Image 1 (tube, protein in one colour):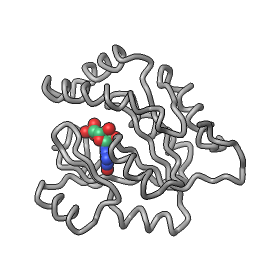
Image 2 (cartoon, helix red, strand yellow; image 1 turned 90 degrees about the horizontal axis):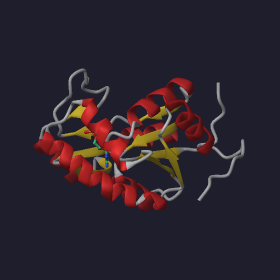
Image 3 (cartoon, protein in one colour; image 1 turned 180 degrees about the horizontal axis):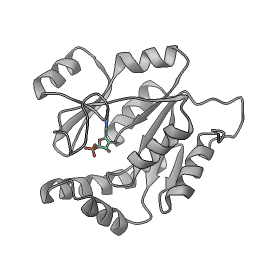
Length: 193
Ligand code: 5GP
């Protein structure tokens, strides 16, 4: 489905999903530089921080027990297991930002995107795809942040995620960064600054 272009149509809750290594992080980062009106939700995870990742900025890095407690207390808008770790979107912050009139962006994996679709059908969901599976594998390996086991799990999951791309409102192929960014802005009906 193509999203209509109209200045009266404002995106409120935006979901960006795509396989690990597709370049979601860099594209989202640049999107936020160009559109400071969008607020990016900081997720919680049980994964250990990668080099350079800051608690509260990239993720809230939580112990497994604390994560489970938040799940029990319905602290997450959605949550999922991914490659051996848990990831979740803090509910309170997202609700607060939405009610203060901010656009909220969630950068999450497929199972989470499905939960959001069920609970917030009005959310706009974009899938970021690589130009090919081989290129995705090259990018994941080139990143050098994961061990072989994590790489295999991420690649397996990527295959599943790629099969689900038609569920999304729009698909953006990240072959060239600038082109993908422009396309993302277009699909979200955002006006360039
Ligand atoms: P990474 O470990 O590479 O930072 O993230 C692994 C995957 O988890 C990525 O696909 C990322 O989009 C996803 N992810 C990050 N935060 C969340 C979240 O809050 N919920 C869900 N469902 N997935 C998330």
